[in-house]
Every structure is written in structure tokens, then in C-alpha cells.
Amino acid sequence: MTTRGMKEDEMRIIADCISDAIHNRGDAAKLEHISDQVHELCKQHPVLV
Image 1 (cartoon, rainbow, N blue to C red):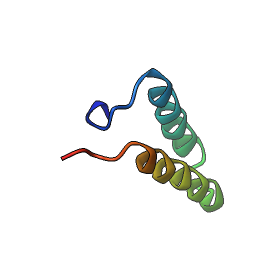
Image 2 (cartoon, rainbow, N blue to C red):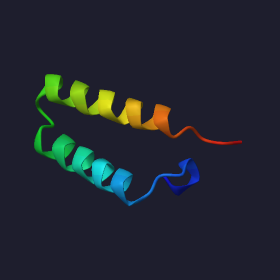
Image 3 (cartoon, rainbow, N blue to C red):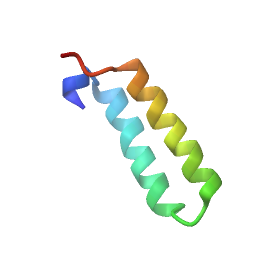
Image 4 (tube, helix red, strand yellow):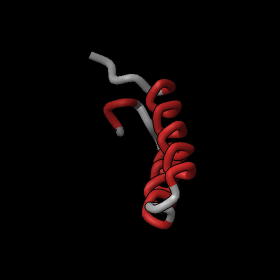
């Protein structure tokens, strides 16, 4: 995560996504929403090589 330049705010978002995924593991629609959030976050912070 730090390789992508993410800071404290992004860490909170990631923690929320992990918690939401655990608590909603049987809800495909919710998991899809979480996946979309993660993809957007990764697009905003690409890996620099």
C-alpha cells in the first residue's frame, strides 16, 4: 500500500473494505460494491515501476 503512495486516509478505507467484506461475505452485491471501491482506489494509486 505504501508502494502505491497511500497514506492514512486510504488505510482507513482499506480497513473498512476488509471489515465490510468479512461482515458481508454472503452478500454478492455488497462484495461487488467493495470490489469496485478497491479497484477505484488502486486506479487512483498505481504501482510506480
